[in-house]
Image (tube, rainbow, N blue to C red):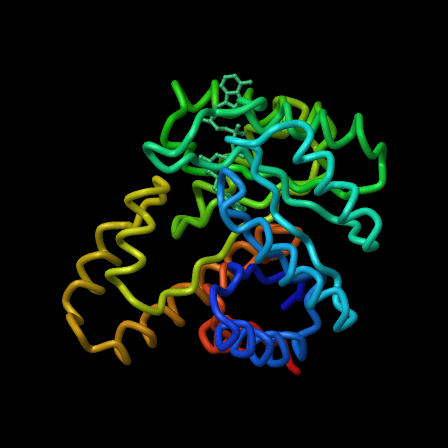
Length: 278
Ligand code: FAD
């Protein structure tokens, strides 16, 4: 089977121990030769320092590091300063997002939507950065309609995004249909599936509820049936997600982006089953 490029996403650790653990995780994942490691950014700048520190470490280790940058709750001045810091460090890729402001936390700030951030990055730094944006095969939970959401996605691409990474999903048809509709709208950039390995069901159910990703009924029922039996959850998750990846690769997915939640094992097991080797 064809083996497209892969990339891995982390969140910035909160403690020195977490940072050490993440370094160990990265060492394992690096053996699979990913194109880049990305690091999330808490909306409103809540993880700004930790995201920057984690990006610095990855960059110093010699890997391609891609900071996420979410604009909600931020100012132009703050975003400009961060962009210049990343540019001076030699960072070449940014994942540009709107983000979600936690309820009760400050005001929206100077950017309302991610397309404004993409335009701002291009205006400030020209073609320096490869800009990734988010895409939603099952549609963003706040979207007025599927079509509006797709048109808003197109806006981000027109503003200068080079490629997109999707929210995770477990139904390959949702991805293929989204890509097909985007192509009809004249959006030609690569749309990379975001892959969420299944490690703990309760955590996955919580995330999915928040971000609008559907866990198909047959999967939900099976996972619920395992209760606290995490070994069965993980074995089932590994097989289901491997099969999803196989379908995506066979259907032409340009690359796969793994949401690792800072753990190596689940992604490694899936990738080994797909024939990737260290
Ligand atoms: P947008 O593209 O701005 O879209 C948000 C909503 O507004 C959509 O419903 C869209 O249809 C609508 N919309 C967009 N533009 C317009 C417009 N011009 N006019 C009217 N309506 C519009 N969050 C974080 O806080 N930190 C992260 O690091 C992070 N990383 C992520 C990585 C990936 C790959 C993905 C898929 C998501 C990530 N998120 C992250 C979550 C993301 O911030 C949320 O899903 C957020 O709600 C939307 O961000 P967006 O960039 O897609 O927003």
